[in-house]
Image (cartoon, rainbow, N blue to C red; front, side, top):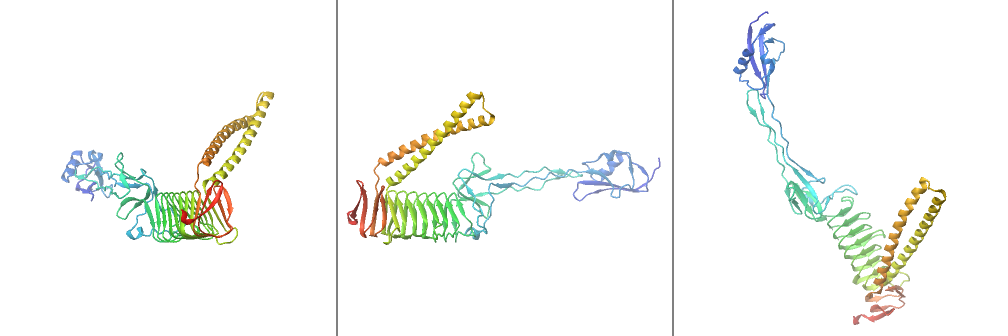
Length: 464
């Protein structure tokens, strides 16, 4: 075996300390280097970790690789992972200025993040620490530090007692992440300005305050209360609680307001209002349809061309304007109950007819089966379907009969029905009180109308 003389033998270590290269410089050929020789060279260069198998080979080829032999390789550190926050809604971090505007660009945007009490709205995923590595010189290399996520909680939220890394809502509302990372739940949304294309429709589980107007064809829906400082045009307003419109509810007749509590409106033009308790009108109503489960309270308001309906009482300043067929007032539950009884009786008759038809068809199928010994698959399917329908029709009939009986019991109860007119009840106003109908022929001043003994009585206002 030919021997050559090595001119130089040195080790180059990479900048990160993870690789060591053995450089053998001499004339091409085969150099006899023992493992002990290589070990000594590495030791002289302080390479002690990750020495590869080649270090023990008896023969190394000079000049075979320009960069040298990869003689040792360290272990890089295993990098960890920063912690992070998983939101169960799409957070739109808002600046202080944006909090007061919440402006958006489309008709129906979904920028409100409705959450319910006890619902999880965010979860903290802790940071995962890495493992240290080792250089070829035996120096430990620490992984990069990881960041733990910071989550601040504000009003309406709390950490879950059973799952400390989870944040839950403690009340219904809108989930929000502020610019400083604070998560909180707003129970009331305030729209600074109008509800229009800049906000889109509003559909919220809490309360809504609008400082401006609600424009035509938009909707404001809330599980709790709605308060509007401006006007409402041909829009939809729905609330589980009270509704307040400080100016007018005005339009062409496409507007609808439904309140689960009390509705208070300054003035109304052409629109429809329904409330589960009272409707309060401050100034006037023209060509409006107003329905209240208990009372319509409007001692300072005038009503022209309106249809008014209340369970117990209607109180107005003026009602009508003398023109025929322009104004109607209906008060008392008895007339409404009688209408409902009539409707239920029609539904009972329809269901009975359907039940009879089903019974006849089933009978024909039974006769067919007796005559032929069996039914075809289609006939079997029809038989099964009809028997199921028969059961459902029976349940419906039982419920309708129960409803009718409850309505009859309600009809027997005393029902207060009165109309209070603080100024003038004009001629040609159609009146209905507990099912009794009357067309008012003469102007009446400061009068109270009540239903007693099957008659509509008139008394001076001063007597109440």
